[in-house]
Length: 214
Ligand SMILES: NC(=O)c1ccc[n+]([C@@H]2O[C@H](COP(=O)([O-])OP(=O)(O)OC[C@H]3O[C@@H](n4cnc5c(N)ncnc54)[C@H](OP(=O)(O)O)[C@@H]3O)[C@@H](O)[C@H]2O)c1
Image 1: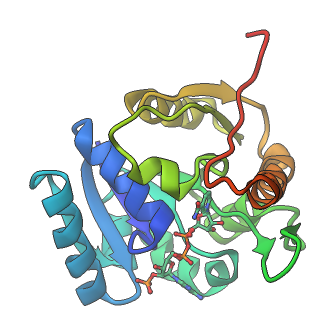
Image 2: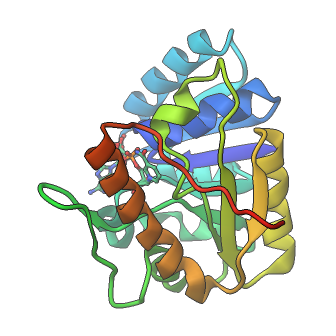
């Protein structure tokens, strides 16, 4: 699959790119600056033994991707998503975005839409937004010598889009769990504040979520 990662120059996007490239997907790293995207793509190609990873502007990455991943800070959505709207039309768009406030206790600070994923869906009305990957830390993604010990909780309005995201999760060894409508994105994003607090309290980098009873 061709996967475009908006903000793929950051830690989370680069980690996802690496994991997916290693299992055979083609990656387009997106950035506000195409040169920065090309530099990051070259770095990741070295790391993944020259697997197919290229760099483009966010808008061009969205145009080229079959699936688009939003790996931007929450405060970047309003400025970035309108310029990728055409490229995202009709496509599966994965929001990994967590609106967190740092600099003290990790606080979940959702936008008026209720969650970053619902804000993204409002800005990309014709895209099929699925919220996922909030609980998979960049640190875990980048340590590719071991599997990730986490479940992948996802939600969204479009069943086929969720199945596509589930396949992408399985391809990197994660068990996908559908937690319903996009209105559950707020609770999912909020759990990340809890995990970030656990990491801080217990000096971890990678606490995660596993659902029992399934
Ligand atoms: N880090 C984690 O462990 C983790 C785990 C789960 C979920 N997430 C979520 O994944 C998303 C990305 O996380 P990250 O740690 O990779 O973030 P990041 O490094 O802060 O940002 C990712 C990229 O977004 C672009 N960017 C930064 N500020 C921007 C702005 N104001 N407007 C538009 N683009 C901007 C930058 O790329 P360019 O300068 O190249 O455009 C940057 O490299 C966040 O929403 C985060 O909550 C992160």
